[in-house]
Length: 389
Image 1 (cartoon, rainbow, N blue to C red):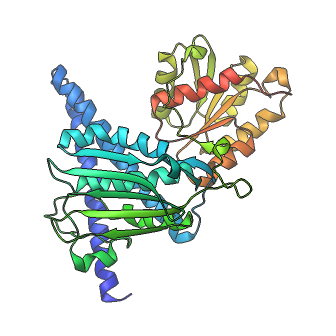
Image 2 (cartoon, rainbow, N blue to C red):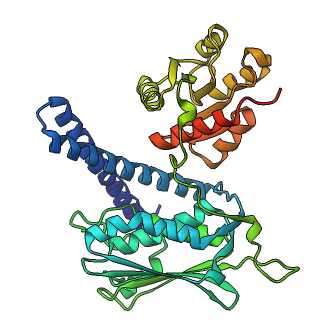
Image 3 (tube, rainbow, N blue to C red):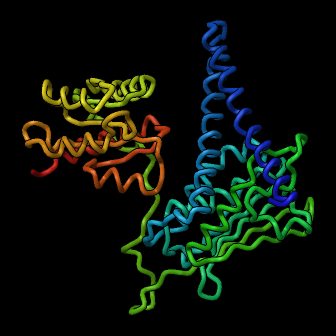
């Protein structure tokens, strides 16, 4: 390995250590203050908010590292369909607006309805926009402005994210989309992060058959990122195909969760903390929860008292969750063979969902779990009812 690559690797590992330890320090510190019992109501609320915020930072960091690993190994795949890109952008802007306004940064959008429908992976397209918009807000100072445009240009959909922020030095512009490259990797840098977001954007745009370009007049002059994507047309009619359009999934918890009240739920997870968390969430919605720590104990529990739904972790010692659900699906209908089942797992690879559903689960949730999403998914499989024998 060349000296230059060695230096880049060492700089990245130092940055990674910093980015891991910083949120962990806040989380552990505030957790210990909570345990001390010496915080007042305001202090406890601040502790919870800080732990939650830093947990989300950790999740994003891990997701970015996993995405880069998939990119390097060629295993990142798209679930392609027609996507209403305008709806995706609107949702991301609204989710980011509170944080931007708290910083004193205004976000403005101009979305051409003729440019909305593209063919691609809705989640990955959202990731592209989210990364560009969060970068723009991050590097734009108070009283700054971020503009997001969706437009139709020469038969292509174009997404333009521009800001009045920090800008990019001319010598750095050619390297903006390089993995692990940051303008400032020193211990005195003003902004955190691993320098992975734009590299991920570049790869995802190319997977969609598009291009991404950056322009900046220099430091302090803001920057503009332009993504070009093929517009989706019906070749026969020469118009858009809205009947196949995927809109963003409604927020978890938007529908009533009365389906959980009084229902018997069997939770299987070898991790005690995970079992307690899932139990607490489901019991808040009126469910009657029984927990076990292994696939063997789950099969025994099914024989003694038939639950209405099974929620199982995938990775467990001995028999894993896929082994469990395969055995369950071999049972007769009246003994639980058709029970609705939800898989939960920390192995959040793109292939994990397909493997879980193929094994016999009805739904899949990656960890870390959002309480409302967990409740909504379990409620959904309950409302769909048992499988047809």
